[in-house]
Length: 101
Ligand SMILES: [Zn+2]
Image (cartoon, rainbow, N blue to C red; front, top):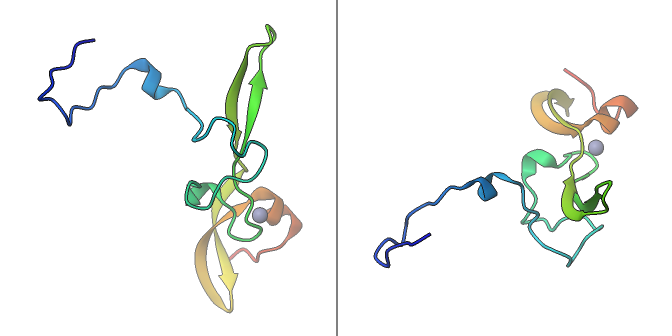
């Protein structure tokens, strides 16, 4: 693809950009993603569970990086007598760590 030099702020969308690409290749695979990288909607406000990077291995043993995201639900909770919305993982909901309200 030929892009003219004066076109600096042109957004080129092709099919490769649709595919999810993990933020890093190998630096912290298996450890929780860094705070600034984590999308807050993918982090539990109770236990702090956040996406972790891993690898998917196909039947032909083609290995590619992927992310494992916790099951986060946006629910109404009661905290200090006040009602607010929070992003809570389903593990915390099932364990009764929050009061639904
Ligand atoms: Zn949680």
